Length: 422
Image (tube, rainbow, N blue to C red; front, side, top):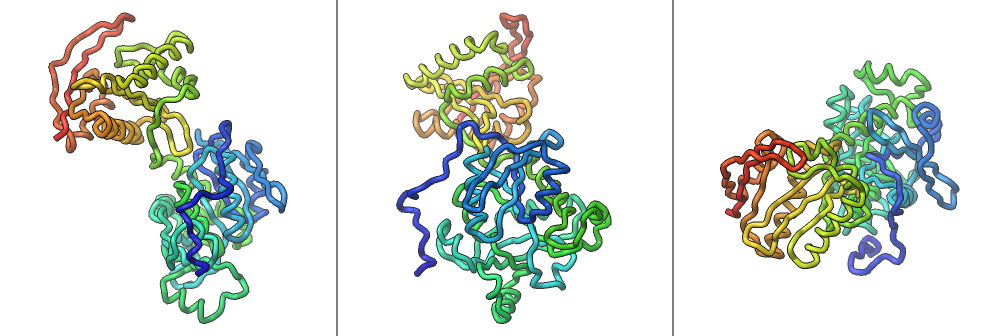
């Protein structure tokens, strides 16, 4: 059967590969309207940061800098194959793993969705693209529907949750199929969602989708924003304001794809600049005096790692941004010492907990460690909160605090803790 075309047993002949110097974006907005593209390029864009190419020509990727966030934007074409292909190309040209897809859609249930943003919860796979990225099934779940709904609610935007019907054939949306999909809970019909969601699941990136079918009712704040060039349809530039609000909301969320990898010297400069005075305020070490000093120390850690004495990992986001590092010194001993730091802008997002947890699991699996030593200044509330998060898995044994003065004159009150596997 043609729907059995999903193959995860052999490699693709051509694979998208991200450029090493690709520009970063916190989130990327994708839509279909040339009118919205023109509006965004004139009103919001700071310039082009990339270009996507296909037989139809160039697709410029614009950058919007807003409230400290880097938001990419480009216009795609109608239909799942080209929308999926261009998004995969975007993944090679951008360091970005969060994509917002919005546009006009047909409304199947006006009683539920008329005058509201339609937020798809699952997409009926009446197209072909999705079957190359996921095993055959009637629906693919739209995994971030709850996040989109939360953003709409927080911004006072009327919305309706429901399934969507993704079709390949605009002129073959027959009456019988319309009634079947409506009876099954579909509130919208469009041509991309199923394919794009299946691809994003396969590529391990996040998709946030919503559709509009005309004027938003009972939303005076948002309708006021749409007065300019408002045609009430898929070219309604006011709908971009909704996408922009969702982009800022999504960009504020923790990155769920954080991982650790053995440290690579290509992150030397980010380590050197990120390990600053604020990071080391309650630590024994000080900021590096020079880039060469940082390189020398990190190389010594890598040499120890080669000898099986130390673990040194980079903490990386889903789009390969360097977030910090986690170290375990003395893994060949009875109670190795833990160390972790996260760059200032990335703190309080849960990254340290996930990274340290992964490093601990690695040490336990590969070195058989069952006890670890953790040290923190009694004033370092962030480090102490981090320690508390491991209380369910480890017995945490505190030692008496010790007042010390570092070589640079910092006065610390360090308390040690032993983490022992329960």
